[in-house]
Image (tube, rainbow, N blue to C red; front, side, top):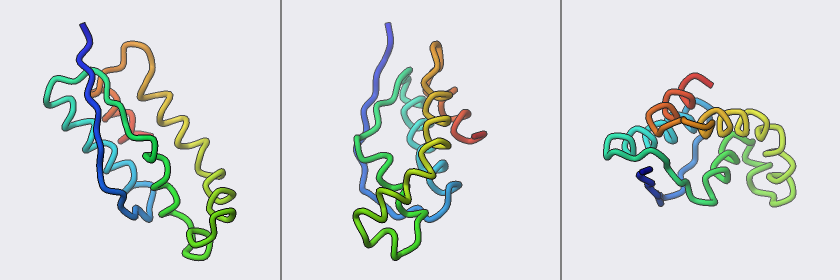
Length: 99
């Protein structure tokens, strides 16, 4: 049996990759601490990557969409590592921290 956790959270401005990863790591660690094997993040989890863009890019819808594209490969690598078969929430938190 797999225990699944789902989370919802306030959208905050994370201006560095480290702050973004720390946020997701904390969520994973909290879920794992409650026995979760899988953590479902909200659809806007990637939206906070825009915090790493300049204020000008963040303030422009098309600019932010274009700007976030350069962050997606790193984000996808982190996600695929964290969701590999047999990867628990505990492992996901570690994968996020080391990406």
